Length: 134
Image (tube, rainbow, N blue to C red; front, side, top):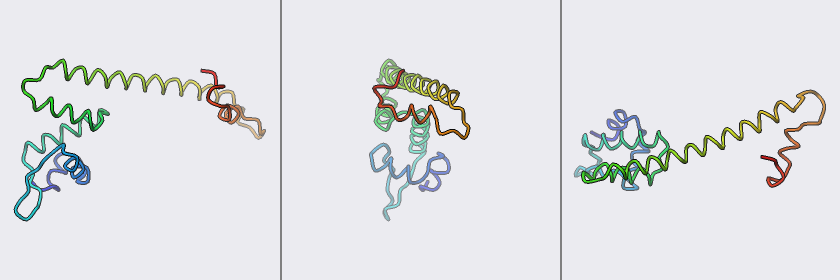
């Protein structure tokens, strides 16, 4: 398969595929004239990477996951640990977003939204971060 074919089948842009090759996540063969030639195994790896990235794993996490995937003597505990660490980060982000949502919701409710210049949203945003209540 050429890069256009594998891009279509994997759902990844050709630019992303080239990037993954540049950083060593995939290593397609090259023809005599220098064109990339992708095997089914490359397509499978690209689908794997696309799914991992869609779940928010970093490039380095993907590198680790790919190494674990290719290591038939791996312990599933290693994979679970990496996934659990990522899940913990996602949970922390969700908590941060919920706190932001709560604060902004409160500020929006406190603002009259009329023609007066007084605005609790702007007043709150102008406070130094240390002075803003949690």
